Image 1 (cartoon, rainbow over the protein chains, first blue to last red):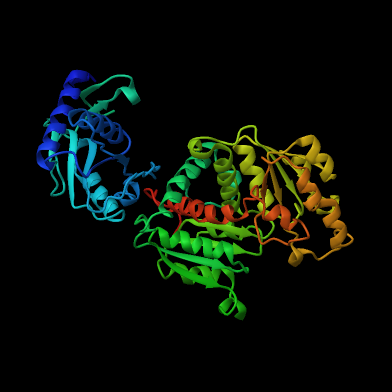
Image 2 (image 1 turned 90 degrees about the vertical axis):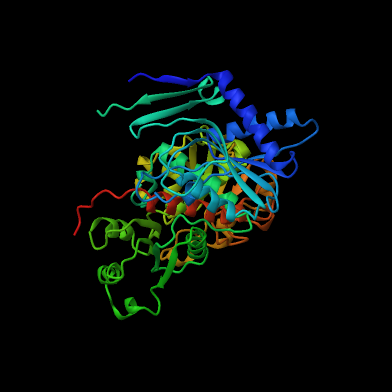
Length: 180
Length: 320
């Protein structure tokens, strides 16, 4: 099993900067933006993205929250019981432009759950999706609005997103899971 | 976790995972939509053969917040009063394709019987059986202690080194039993104080220290938590102590005793309280008292227990 590195730290930083600019372009500024990360690494990415946005637009404040989707998943009875993560939404999202942030977009089922979870928290004007890696293989009619890297992959490949805060390095790598 | 019958079966990792999930459940109660879809389409029966207000309502609130369909069964006014056996009652429910049972029963061991006999193949949660166990009460007590002691940093932590003093009717108390096992698993030290007549025979085998003098124990053990147990009039079939006044003087948390405690000592009581008997109003209504927090936390902890027991893939069962 050999891991091939797809993105280095500078590539990740560059991708986040580009996504930040795209968000500002589509939102025509930083006003009423709220970033909600999907635990665990989505939250970390959301914090970084917020810092980039606030850097580009001096004086702006882009709140960041975390949105746990465990209770909304459609596979609660197909997988071993999952533990939950905190949901922490610091501001009222009614009327806001919510950007959901996750590390990898795959089947789209996590995002489906996130949209349901969001409905229980309020009614944003607009919801968009930002991901660091889109690896394809969608099972639901869901697409990302902002993508760091499109990475066509096979089902038996695994995408590893490593972030400094959790893994001590910033890389995205791909490896093949060899069946035991 | 397939069932929740006894805190003896709960490992440290499972207990901490459950308390962590309960932390996330607690935040749901603060939201406008106090509901999660995790148990949507699941039917849970609350099978209460013994009277209960807070436990039954707490379970019902927890089930509804997880979107389960709830059927409440009280033995009074049911076929049980016509002499139907537990087995027949349960098989009747099984025929209705329910997905989980929460049972309270006056006989110790009834929930285990339900889980093991193959009468019904669904998860079983013990909501109190006789003088045996009341695991969700112990879990909510541990959750309350952890929150008070560690605050926002509770996640992932046990109760290592915490000194808990449990006072009162240990003999009849399922709350005490469940707490003793769980607190040991989480790393706490437990000391029991009771009249000798209200201690069980097997006490030497419990992982606790025991004494009979409350004032001495409060001074020497210097507890972080004092848990007062209810004097269970309904189970008192013998003369365990001369009279209530004497009990209160020797083993009650009177105003005088309470005033001598450090201000950081938590006062816990599983409810319902006999004010003036085992606990004074001064203690029960003080800021150190967690009585109402325990009730609020009960819903979050029971949501976590239901979630942990009911979700997850089912191994192919060997019954039927």
